[in-house]
Image 1 (tube, one colour):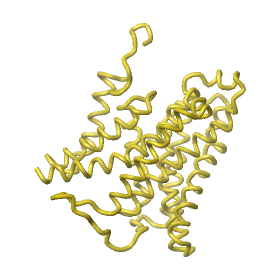
Image 2: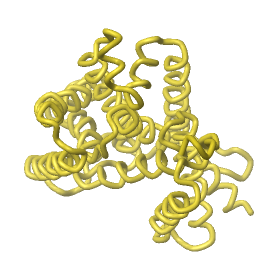
Image 3: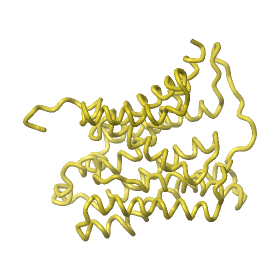
Image 4: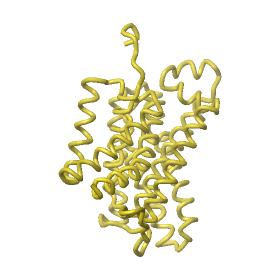
Length: 293
């Protein structure tokens, strides 16, 4: 029982990271309606920028983290300005955007591997101190991950509810033409979507890299985790993204208890397939009337 409780505690901490990934991916997928594979590329850009600034340029870690998040946000905006937006102006289909996004991901991963190598890079040296909660053990980094992740995710939820510009961004996924007709700054809103998405990816990446390090190929796992959480929870419901992330994290922890970590992918995509077959609108989305389907 102690092992199960420890794994559930670990799952709750992982849920904070998964929620960041879900919000980052969901912002672009919900607002622009295309599968943003390059989200995985942005995920690694921020951490490798911090590694370069801290270990190669010799900047303090905190300064490197701030600059790394800024570089990650800029990279997301540049990807949109240089690739996605020109393609959309030419009326490219979502399939073309999908392939272009995949191409960006492959290009970035290979460039990072070329300059930094394929081995794991460690951002934080030394052994993390741990604390005991009864029979359970939690590390300092897990505490940081839990509080930073949930504060950012919950804080952003309040901003969405109160800020009119964020409400306009939310409406982009439903009626993009209406946004232009109403005179809202579509280009600025689009840029903000990619910047915010990249910041969420960067925070999740850094919280993970500071704990276990990073390599050029971890971005795909982060992308799939965020995408599955959004699709399982419900694309059109912010709380659904969070619910999907928590569900994935906890079920993966239980799978480790019953089987092993090798079965996590089966759990992840098994839930996705079952959801798409029996509740395609998402587990946490409100039921729609028959005439709305």
